[in-house]
Image (cartoon, rainbow, N blue to C red; front, side):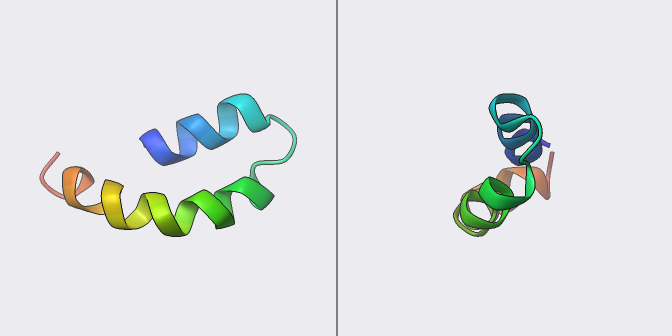
Length: 37
């Protein structure tokens, strides 16, 4: 949720470009806290 919120917030109309770039990096770090959370 954090990864999408940060990307969809400042990005706005372009959530796909940043989503792919920070999505990969954010996925690894955010994947751990998102699973139990």
